[in-house]
Image: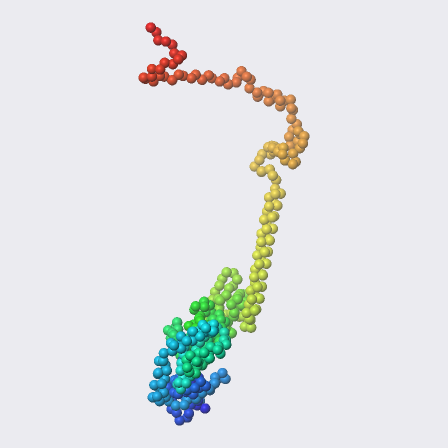
Length: 392
């Protein structure tokens, strides 16, 4: 069966269509398509042939003919039609029925008997009453179609960060699921602003190299996996999947990049095994640190015990020096005699104390201080009351 790949609709859908044997078509030719929605105008994107379709690909319809002048004129009129009244009425009825619906775009089929309105919503909605009132206000047959974020980006159309037209517009036929695991496998930044596309979802291009990364990842160890290099037990710190290189940690503070051919590892490790290995390494490290702390404490305790066990008398003190007995010490004797002192003659001690007393006649004599009267100042006529009268 001869089929052709054609792009059609405002959503820029791409599907396979049956082609009559006698119809000669080339790439970029415009054709009239018969789909399940009606007659539509599309563009050939792949030359006709006996294409082998995947199980998930279907035949969307058939190619009827090449467009006539009437078809082309009608298509241009419908593409330039002003849908602003339709958009305004859509918003009014959505607010009236309290439906969280957002208008995206509208299109009219080539037959002109149906108006298709695209909208986005977070969840599935019951808009039967909405459709009834909307159809009566528009005055023609209306089909409401809910689209996702990726289809909304198709309708809007834009250019990606790579400078090319969005992949969903240019050539993607069916959207494939893209997960965060693909970004982690390729060691791409997990910043949402960098790995999200125009639609706000993960970029479709993350899927392009995922198969290659999965094939090459089987020949390199996982990050954190134990490996053997130069006959030593090490572990992989970082892995370059495309370069087939591994940064090896030798455990002595040395990290070096080595090719995969110079190391050996177990290829059947999983993320669960990596987590278990890291937990065991941490427990071993904590046990070694606790042992080092205990040994250090034991050494400090032995040093303190050795210092407390030494003689309290300083070695520089003379042998004939007698230590001063502290009367407040616990081991101070209650009596006046001690083994560290010779018996003291109290009578002789009292005599020595009396001999040191200074006699009264040798005490210091306080000298009298003579206070002098102040001299009178010139011009001061005042006479002190105790002054003698002047001689006559």
